[in-house]
Length: 230
Image (cartoon, rainbow, N blue to C red):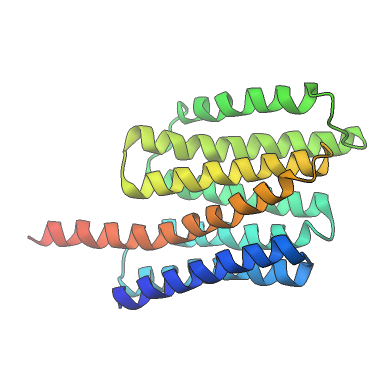
């Protein structure tokens, strides 16, 4: 089964990256919906694998829920920006909680998030080229920046505690997610349309890594259980 799941991940990864390119070139909410559905499918397949292997499912389920919210936020963002941002933010909260299931939460973890958020806040507020169209939208963007900063900070803190392959993959995916959103901010509110390509080039690979992390987790738990049996 491991081989089948591995091949499935590879095929779907290639499909995801291909659709990413198609969306960059053509655009459209239909193509975006299909592309986002692919990374949720990757997460689902890996979740099923984790279930079949009878490992602890708290992390895989929470991670998968985060992926679903990311997909919904991605699509709804095209229809209503604030609603999409709120759904995305809920997804980041789910990711944050799932990361806390891998490495126990400590208030020191918030320091990493703070180090990311403070310069992000200063950049968002002080950069002269940002036009939010109102205080309400600016507040939404700031709150969103805080939530994603805490999520990324927790991912980095996990690597600082335990430099495992799983934590490193999650950290890379989370950082790419953050950078993708930064490009989106520059695109939508900074008047820099060219960075939209960078946004998409980072976003879908980031989601793949977060979906693939469920498979890595299942393998890690299996290896741990086998060692305990010896």
